Amino acid sequence: MTRQISRRSMVKAAGIGIGIGATATVTATALATPAGAAAGPLAHPGLLHTRADLDRMAAKVKADARPYAAGFARLTANRHAQSGWRPNPQAVVYRGSGTPENYRILYNDIHAAYQNALRYHVSGDQAHADTAVAILNAWSGKLTKLEGSADRFLAAGLYGYQFANAAELVREHGDFDLGRAQELMRDVFHPLSDDFLTRHNGAVVTNYWPNWDLTAIACVLATGIFCDERAVIERAVEYFRHGDGMGSVKHAIPVVHEDGLGEWVEAGRDQGHALLGVGLMGTVCEMAWNQGIDLYGYDDSRFLKGAQYVAKWSLGGDVPYTANTRRKGAIGGWSGSETASGVAGVDPSMTRPIWAMIANHYTKRRGLPASYLTRAAAKAAPEGGGGDYGPNSGGFDQLGFGTLAFTRDRVEEPGGSPTPGSGADASPTPGSGADASPTPGSGSPGGSRGAGGSRPQGSASPVAGDGLAATGSGEAAGWAAAAGIGAVAGGLLLLRRRDRVRREAAE
Image 1 (cartoon, helix red, strand yellow):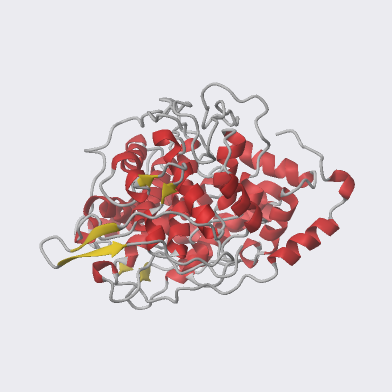
Image 2 (cartoon, helix red, strand yellow; image 1 turned 135 degrees about the vertical axis):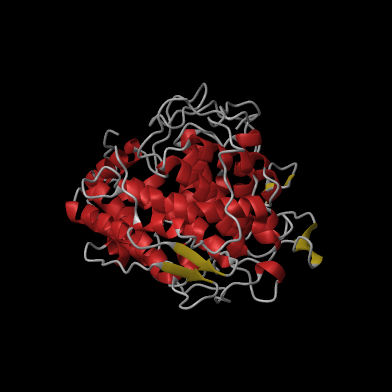
């Protein structure tokens, strides 16, 4: 197949950069095949949703089954999920600084593409697929650069993984320009994210809190899967397991307590960013799982322990915290340190649409107890998505709709090794003991030992005056109230036909 030279390629060849001093290459340092993944072709669709997932959603909604119908109703009520959405692509997107600071246009359009694509798969309405394709094609045909302050790395990570997920859902559509979308991921989103994992914007490696690394990991992993590049996948997987930055799993969750809870380091910062980090790590784990790589279970299910910790804390429970001092500053420049000595205060009504995905993996796929996760998921249900949690960027950090997308039936006969990426929800034998502590050795192909709310806070951006990372837009650290969730859910239940509530559609 002959590939035409695109306008973006010509721009790049002319020497117009993408706003960073150097672009890292991953192929020289990455391995050819991710550990724990099958050597065959990658699964498509295979980012946050597999074909089995999409078929399950459609069947359950058609059967009017709980809680899928309520989750789908939240999707159809969102203004981004309407087939009349029209894109507004930009050649250059700025976040944190620049004229104009226009990144809101990008994240609104990406969420509209994702929501329309998801709605198409559930309803079968072709108009929504066509809308998603039109949005994605418009952006891949125009966007050439991401610029701004350090926040440009957040834009690359967040909107890169989200663009890939929306595109993955329509990759087989006859009008979708797959090659151009892959080029956009390779040339615009991925280079910034990979460079951040390599150089951290010229800062000491602990200068940035975990969510900065996690946005980059999510984008790199999504790029590798969407573009069928195993070396790029391995880059993300290796960093998740062993990276030097705070977003690798053992740095994000540095302490596991005797009660089985894993201390989430960013709980010493604030609740909103801790929730963001958990949501991003869950996103990374889910995308990897769908390609046969079990990061959920890595290091004796360390992420489960950290997610349980944040869920308990966010629900108002008491959790321990070990004082943590991190170095800050620029390499060869200024330096300093910051100590978090205890957990930040919490608002039990604050949430992000992150819990359904994580809770369903551990309790339904794996058959493990996770009471704090299930309580948090139940409290947040039915989860919405971008546009349901306020207009600021923090309300668009997750794609959402987990009640619809990730609710699944419990595996009836758990046992043996998990089979991620196969479409089946195989589960290992559940461990005993504390909620957050599955039995060591419970099957991980990746080399492990085992395995919406009222006021979510700002985006991953730091506040002004906070050192090298503090070059963001100073966006208000609070989202508008998402009022009436309980009332909506209650109304949906009344509208359902009660004789169809328990009907189970074959997956």
